[in-house]
Image 1 (cartoon, rainbow over the protein chains, first blue to last red):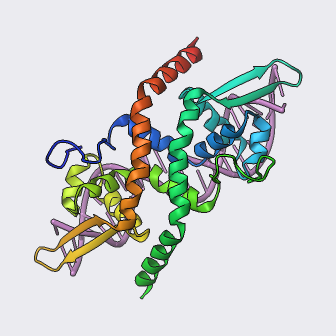
Image 2 (cartoon, helix red, strand yellow; image 1 turned 45 degrees about the vertical axis):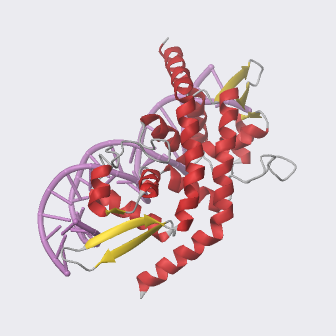
Image 3 (cartoon, chains in turn yellow, cyan, green, blue; image 1 turned 135 degrees about the horizontal axis):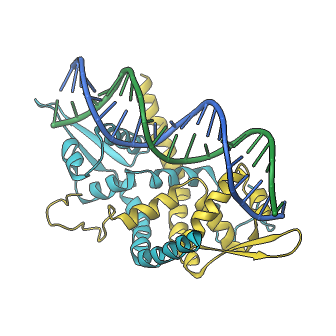
Length: 128
Length: 128
DNA sequence: CTGCATCCGATGCGATACTG
DNA sequence: CAGTATCGCATCGGATGCAG
């Protein structure tokens, strides 16, 4: 990315840096944030997570958890019982993600109506 | 989504609410955040944006700007000159999004190394 | 300069069936 | 219970060409 002149974004960060991009991808994907928030509540077993998140497929829950685990945000603990029991929990690193996510969620809910109005207005203009 | 028992996430927000989900989608998509940050710097013309964002296709820049405009985050101003000139700028609403996004970006950059190490370790375990 | 339309490969993700 | 494997549709997004 070419910067705009002074070589630095006045916002004080580079939204184009690969690390930022990757985190944004994580936060943006369909299920990761939801899983992180739920695990922020308490350690949870696989099937309980599946029941808690209405609409998620087993495939996507597995993939989401693997991704979060790979990034060191989630810890997977296997108890060799019969039947097997697997607990997922946030790591300390994962816990630090809770606050930034919350800031976004608060923004979303605080501006929900305003965005909706803008959207309606935009769509009306399009129809005319 | 079924909540975990008390009917409310202790984090103090519902990451599953549709409004939150939509905002997360916006923030998560490939180019929106980058465009918002750039426009946070200054109003910018279409082709200047295109040059500033290395790798974006014209198609996606158009789509991204339309989406942001529809949500009331970006304002599009046409100057009926010849050749035509179109300026994009953040709306006041768009400007309020800058701070939450920055919080995330700061997190990303602050934990970049830690995530990378976790990822490397995870991948090594997989190979063995 | 600022777009829109079309084509088409890449990826996302749900459904389903099978395993230890 | 906690996954893995495979399929198939839907959407994403780049490349290209045309237009006001």
